[in-house]
Length: 240
Image 1 (cartoon, rainbow, N blue to C red):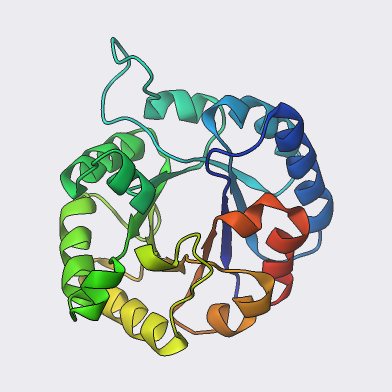
Image 2 (image 1 turned 90 degrees about the horizontal axis):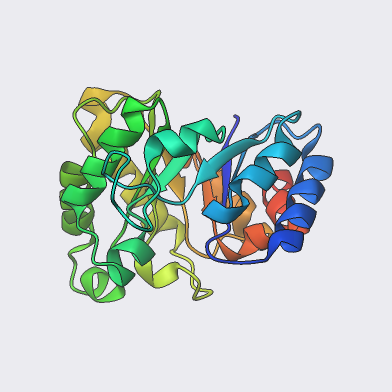
């Protein structure tokens, strides 16, 4: 089964780094039958777009504003992303929720703007370690889903990424049983609206990719640190 292998480069690398990484991924991805997506920082979108344009690799962004173009210093609008050739945009990542105080209603507004521009959204949800320890993981994720996903979301234009906050960039990975349980919960909750793809994110690397991504309810991965090296990013796809 084809999986979505999404690389979130976050705020990493200079121009030379982005050029080298994108070129290496293009060279190495040929012949691997999965859907590849790279999400560089805003300043590298044009460069990366020019490198991957003749390949099957897709371009995404890490965020967009809920506003129209205008007097919003520092913001990037969905139509700007579309003009650079972006097909996807990540929304509601836990680092945005934590570092910038983004609430689910704002994530929903951003998703609405992205869908208006025919961008596919990757909407991130996930619980903190304290919330999981207190038995609140599904309740928290359920509320995030209810408040973050717009009414016009469909399996064709929206992907969900389950990223337990405590597993992002920590080296910790959720157990297979926890991943299976949460992904089944999300699938069942969204079932009335269709069969949405659910990605897992949280310290995914080549060493654990096979056991995670062969679970039938895991439709791909949202990869952070491991996406910053072509060998590890491609190694995740090869491990499936």
